[in-house]
Image (cartoon, rainbow, N blue to C red):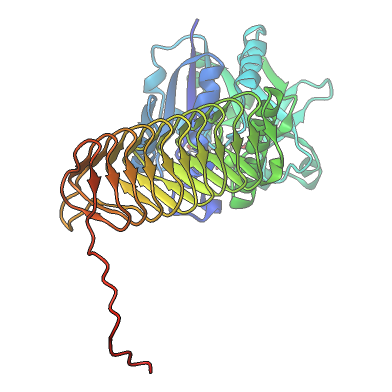
Length: 452
Ligand code: UD1
Ligand code: CA
């Protein structure tokens, strides 16, 4: 039977002290809630219902591919589940309940958790973790025989109960019909005046049902994020995990502590990542590259054998064998062809640069289609903007653009053409022609030198 998941994400996240809903805060470059959804999907979930409330519109805008249900007032986790009752009216078997603020959950942990529940006769199973620092979590109270007794929230706990290190991770498997059958009986008679979801476990137990408690092997995977200190800890943990996966797959990371790789990034074998490097979004990097130091790649497609240092590149493609940097800005919509050299203070925007072309120093190339084997001299500028509209520049294969050339778009420099240094090109240059567009030099022998 297919697994259905309910994710609680309506809370204000008061302790974050943020204008942004807590579950949209990013760890590893991705909203916390998205991590939870991804983990559920990896565990085999085929339907995710997300309870939203605080900042609901923002959450709906950011998160795709799930069903939303609105909890108008945030009266507690039990009340949040109740607001989704209608969504599960037709459901049977297990519903997996998760919190939107536990981004380190893994598909594997959830899969094992669900399997343990389903192979038992329990009406509900709660995921627990042994936390070295249990402050803030609900504590798991077990009977003398070790079976689950109840969960006590931090604010309701006695001093003795507070010493317990086993905590409620906020993940549950429920027999869906038994859950909604008992949920109405939850009251808000507690320190926070909230309807606590964990109270359903006690209600079911008192009705004679068995309740399981499954302990996560790695407590860190159940970390709940309530404030920005925990946010930073989760970010670190998720990045370390990502880097470990990459290193195990054959990527060298010189200094994992100063390397920041987002969770969805892919990097090929034998690529070396040098320090102070940020690889973000959906960036894909090929094999045998040397990336960094000091690189920021966001949503980039990068081929094999690319060398890049001290540069920022976003939403663009860099093909095999390219040498990039230092101090390059590659902007959206750009494709840098095979074996191209781009370096030393060069900006390229919304342009195609053909195979083997050279942009070695101090160029601005915008809205340009450049062929292969082009040599662009130092200081060349494509003048693509007249103050109102942008125009394209076309440069044919093997053209030679002399230093300090202005190419006033729209303009075409045909294949093999040669432009003299210092030219301002406003007319098309035919194939193999030499274009000189600058004032001739005059040397004046007798003149009034005011310095004398
Ligand atoms: C909750 C658990 C606690 C557990 C911890 C694990 C309860 C009462 N306590 O505490 O036992 O150790 O998680 O991290 O369940 N939410 C709603 N609507 C609400 C209230 C909360 O959707 O009315 C959502 C929040 O957005 C959040 C999740 O439920 O994603 C948990 O709420 P939070 O307030 O963070 O609960 P904790 O105090 O952490
Ligand atoms: Ca929490």
